[in-house]
Image (cartoon, rainbow, N blue to C red; front, side):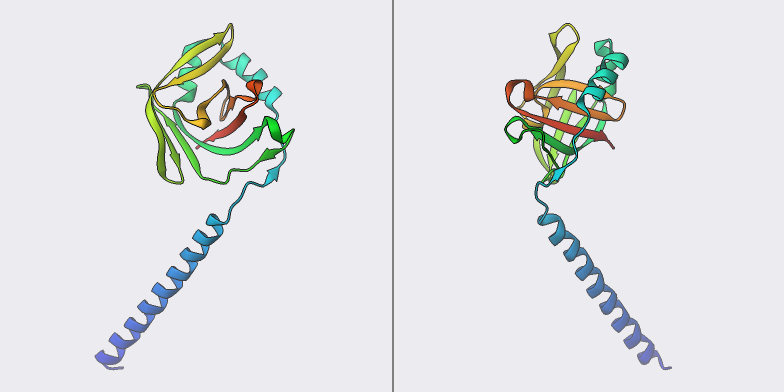
Length: 164
């Protein structure tokens, strides 16, 4: 095969690969854009609360346990009854040991600033954040790689996260 034939073959192969890559990635984006909130099986909040109380008896344990990256996996809202729903957005929360947090919603900053624990009752804690985020409201229930912001006690939504 001549040099021109080899160059033409390489060019055709490159264009074909590029077209296939573009088609595959656009299909994935389209599927992700069509995600909606769908009902899933519930999270065992009682087990998470029990685990939290056993493992996080001191504020320093909660603070160090929160540090890292968390991904929103589901939520339950008071007005939906016992139904748990999968997220319709990709939400990632990061907490640093320096007291800084960021909430990303579909890769865009939804909220960021500083955070600190706030004691609500004897063994109950919540977050004080510099800026409001609907994902970080309510009591904190932390069990190993599971995190719940429990806000249904005031008719709000509970947001469930897992560590990434």
